[in-house]
Image (cartoon, rainbow, N blue to C red; front, side):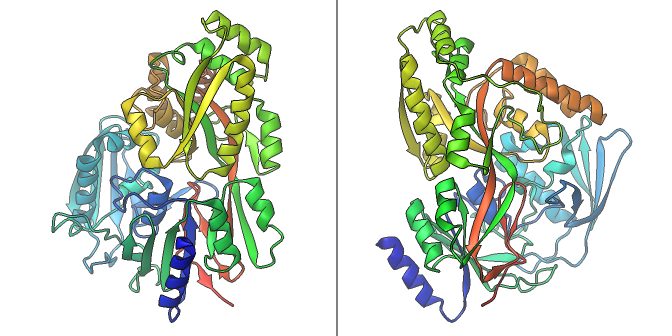
Length: 490
């Protein structure tokens, strides 16, 4: 009732100025590009801030954004960017080279681990003149340009921290209006946006963890847009004449990860046994129909360089039991599997896995928590295993491999450490010859698969449901709603 009352109150309060409302599983944790770490933060940030470049969807081509052009040295270690002139931040100050230098140095200071995962060979950034900046790298970096499109590399106003507290001041199409944490974020249109003011006056992101409540708000018109997470949700809405659907390619990889730093999952045989109790093909068909496909590599198949020649571990209870006995667990064991709240698709899949595991004596205690609590558990290193979704940062194999399996990867919650894989990943990133680097990434994916470093479960498409009065809905390849071109018509 509290959520319904909130919606009704909000609708009445803003009835004189229609607001586009997006219902989501959870609120953003921050609006600071330098420290964001979830889709829910990045989605709002991506409607307020911009980077030097952006990646087109579809096609994955890098194109100019705040920079109108760039040049690269022959050795691939020096990059020079020429800024567009006349672009203003939300506070009225002009975008210039000082702001770009400030933003990158701030990112490096505020979040050094993430900065180095993006810009592994960064040496310095310097101002050439008021509208020109230059990056110098210690080694050539095949994905440097792609990482410039990430939220962490977005440009913020040098005035953003003047009073000691960060204010989200960017150059993007929307400006922060009000933020009530764990409830909603209200943005208003940037009337001076350099690409033309948005067609909607206000934009609201509303946190509704309960799936049924989210669907109800779309059906009764209290929300305009939401992202679907299961076939059941899709089937519930697909025949509604007032609702449209937007589908994107299978870019989200859901997976099970193990704490490989301690028993029982530090033993490869136990990890393989676990892989053999998951009837992946059957479960994906049963739960998702044609809205997901079984996953084998951690790199989605639409990403150039995905190893589509890998052979999956078949469903085989006898083989799983034999492997567990060899590893010293003939009667199985008990463990806790952590996952995120609100993902109905993943929850339904895991309930089936839990039941399958009982056949070999593995007793799984499932716990579903908000992201913030999950990160604390991962940081403690006391988890057994977990299941999460992963959307690649950039359309390149390096993103998934470095983030999830590199020993110093920012999302390596498996605590996985394989020196041979680390060397392959580094070699591939510094190789500019495209054929050679793809071959290296194919080998790296095979190595990770052979070691059962994680278990990819399924690749799911992003399905956005929205009211038929809404036009121009956009979703980038990371699964974030981009709403600068949205309009609402009767």
